[in-house]
Length: 82
Image (tube, rainbow, N blue to C red; front, side, top):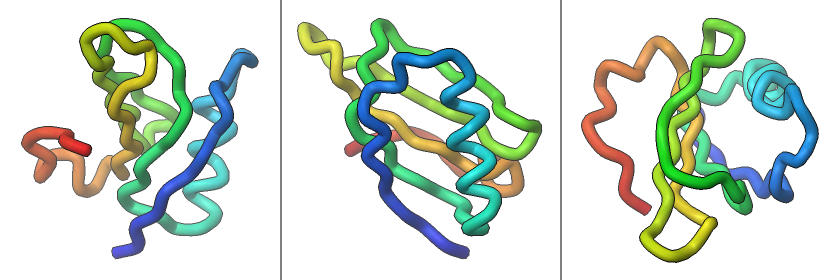
């Protein structure tokens, strides 16, 4: 398995998750920590049927915990802590 980190610089354009998922597929990464995503609340999204994007916001900050997980290992993920 291959792991990595990525600074995405806030993702203000539409389709940013899909673009990132394509690049992760090209590098054959299974688990990637993502930095500088400024989204509110928390949740999950599926991208390209290959990756799940999970995020959780800190209490007062708009910057939170984010991670891309390959669909093959997503069932093994219990929690996301950074």
